[in-house]
Image (tube, rainbow, N blue to C red; front, side, top):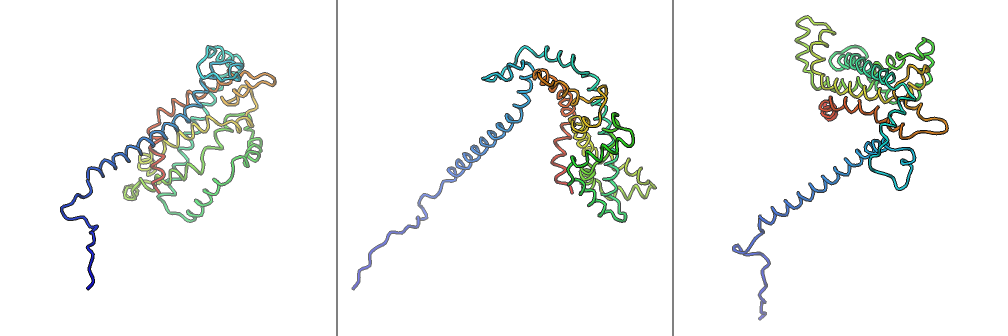
Length: 303
């Protein structure tokens, strides 16, 4: 006869202790807390990396050239801000350049919003022969680097007598593929076809429909495009440097470049000029920040 040894059961009895739900909740809370702390630390590092260059610009605008290149670097504000600003005004026509830059940037933004919204509205809500082919060709122009068009554009401006005039900065950029593509995405997702049909029934033509239906529905996208175009035109340096040959018709960026003298550059004055050129952009961005930030995400979702 074979004896059977008793075995211990590994299965917990019905009345035995089981997993505690409170422990699971505490563990989940700890994991969530750690994730939030790590996320906020990463965001803080990103903010510091983004803000420090501007802070360094402000610091350098209050220092002399010797302080800027000294070691260890001085990270606190100095007493030379007013002196550097006076140097800027003594060497360049800053107010004239500021007006020229504002005029070019504002007119560029208005024209881009006008022509790009017209084209985008047509591409999004109207059918016409060759629409898809034209849109593909339009997008293909975005693949061409802007530097390749500098020489042909200058030759064209020279042929029509626009070299040296501000119109050479405004008219060539009055419409662009990026703005048309962006507003087409907005129009396709935010303008119901029923509104277009209702306008047609009421006898409205293309321009009336665009003005009464398209523009109100595209206000967010137009605000984003206008701010983006304004900032881009304000910061443009290469094209104004090529076509503006008259010292009295300089933009802000080309005027500030004159502070880089051949043998001695006053970097404190250069930084002070750069600081003054940035301040108006900060004001424009603050005014339109709500549309600018909100519509970056909205444009990616509409299609």
